[in-house]
Image 1 (tube, one colour):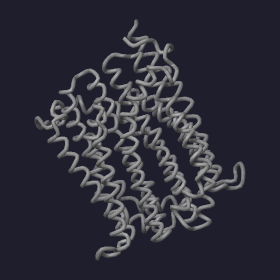
Image 2 (cartoon, one colour; image 1 turned 135 degrees about the horizontal axis):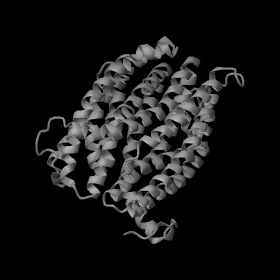
Image 3 (tube, one colour; image 1 turned 180 degrees about the vertical axis):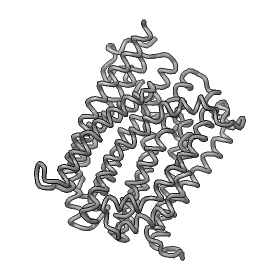
Image 4 (cartoon, helix red, strand yellow; image 1 turned 90 degrees about the vertical axis):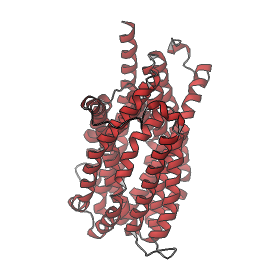
Amino acid sequence: MEQPLNKSKSLFSDKARIEAHSFFKLAAPMFLTQLALQLIQVNSVIQSGNYSTDVQAGIMLAGNLWFPIMVGIGGVLFFVTPMVAQLFGAKKVDEIGPLVRQAVWLSIPIVLIGMFILSQASWILGVARVDPEIIKYSEEYLSFFVFALPAILLSQPLRSLCEGTTRPLPITFLNILMLLIAIIGNYTFIYGNFGFPEMGARGAGLSAVIGTWTSFTLLVLYLKFKDEYKPTQLFSKFDLPNTATLKEILRGGIPVGLGNFIELSMFSGAGIILGRFGSEVIASNGIALTIGGLFFMVPLAVGNAAAVRVGNNVGANELIAAKYSSYFALRLAVICAIIASILIVTFAESLAGILNNNPKVISLAVTLLFFAAFFQIADGLAMGGIGALRGYKDTFGPMKIMALSYWGIGLPVGIILSTTNLIVEPMQAVGMWIGICLGLLVAATLMVLRVKETSNRFINEQQS
């Protein structure tokens, strides 16, 4: 059994160095994986912004629709990672393949639901009173991107297999490949280079389709022929849907998906609501979210690593070690967040200028980036806590916290401050970001308390 937690709290102890090494082996590839995904979006923003501000705004608004679908409805599948991690920690490797096969079955109806929602993009954006000219470009982008969604969601159970068995590096390489395809594809299809027709927003969507399906195909082939994955029995047989396994995934996965949707709907909802203020405000908000999202990849990677580390330890019945991993994730997330805040404040104007050359857009984006710098620590604590709790398969509690913090506080306050005069004159984007910051602060506080309560409960149950 591991030594008690209070004997090894220092970040400089031998235990901490061992834990840091384990986290680094997981978090570094996971960070690069998430960074590559975010850079795909950044690349679209840059290349579309150089093409047309309206096209850029349209693609950004489209992202405000498809990304919540991917991590909201598709987030049900994210729960497969801690399930795999616990099986791996318990040395039940041969049960991993059957679990992943059931997750693939589950991904099929999720794909169909997601594609249907994207087909209603015009109506959704119209209800939000977005400029019809911008809606047109969102529709053009999504008319192709909708066919990328199956590859994205079908890949998630396979990604969970890699990450839950502490082998995240293949996903990293494939996402970097997708980034390279996006850079070349957007340059080719948006502008009409290399003899191809100029497609504008449609070109960015086509590029996404090519990249996602290439990555998915290569991942399947890699897992099929790589010897390290043969003990999982992934390709050993064909299974029909298993009700018991599907229920287990849904029981833990629905709160994960809802929690992801709640958090991202706050950001995406903010972008859609701000759409009524014109393309310059949309672009500024999108730039701030894009840059903030790049820095967010670090605490997200820490949280994802925590889910695997804690899950492995829980599966091995090392519950004090699981608690240590949970607390270590929170401390590491804070350190990374402080560094991120300093970098954002220092380079805000330069970063915004890379994504758009409109002085008005840059000025507002810089203002919003100062808010993004402010909430880095809160966001880091929240993500570290969510990841640790997933390792315990505790997903319903975090979902309730996010619902209260983001829908109950963050988004309502943001709407009031940005669009009404109930408290002050409408503050537009600044008011919305004040609400977001408040919601994140509440979420971080409650998430840390939840980690403490859950980790102690597991230990007490073991000792009783």
